[in-house]
Amino acid sequence: MPSTRRHFLDTLALGATALGAGAALPATLRALPAEFAAPPVQGEWDTRWPARLTGRVRTVFDVPEIESGYGVWRASVWATQFQRVLGHTPTDLSTALVIRHNAIVLAMQQAFWDRYGIGKSRNVTHPATGQPTDRNPALMGAGDGIEALQVDFALGPFMRRGGIVLACNLALEDLVALVQQADGVSEAEARTRTRAALVPGVILQPSGVFAVLHAQQEAKALYIRAS
Image (tube, rainbow, N blue to C red; front, top):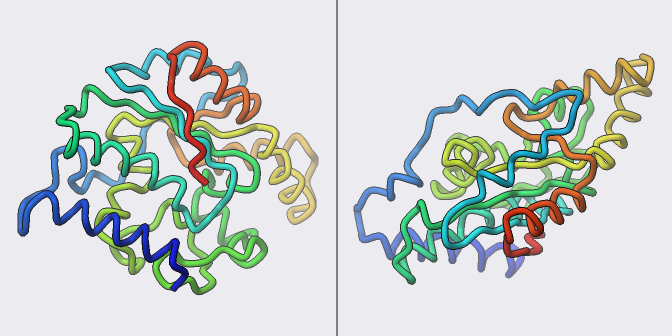
């Protein structure tokens, strides 16, 4: 297993240990319902989301690479550390997660990955084993052979805790072209199908860079390159 992956897993384990042997996870990290938030806004861009970045520490995590889903999990790890080490409460902390560039596939539902062979075509590797996988690592659950905290840090639980997930429309256009070619449909129909395949609750933005800058300008969010 690569040293960077091992180090990240060790960090997760230390976080769990610091909570106390046998102790339950904090309320913000407990297993959450599988249902995601409302479906993505279609048509007019939703630019109101920075108002949801509140509290003492507001962050925007930039995820441009797939990296076995680790960029997504980093958007949650920091909050557990700030609570444990600095004594912050969950309401002190808020996060926007921007999925763009090569990582755009992390914002897509598993059915999309299955239909268009995303795992194989993008050389995606399993976060724990480093072996090729057909699963979207950002959506992996308890049956996928990952650490319990990684399950709690997946996109669904992240959004249920109030995290904001934003997707780059420019990067999504590459997937539109993929769908158009694979399904033999018009560009307009391919775009409709691709947008419908976004993970429910993900907010589509004109671009990932737009989303990052909007978070910084409107919410004074601290920028972090997460992958």
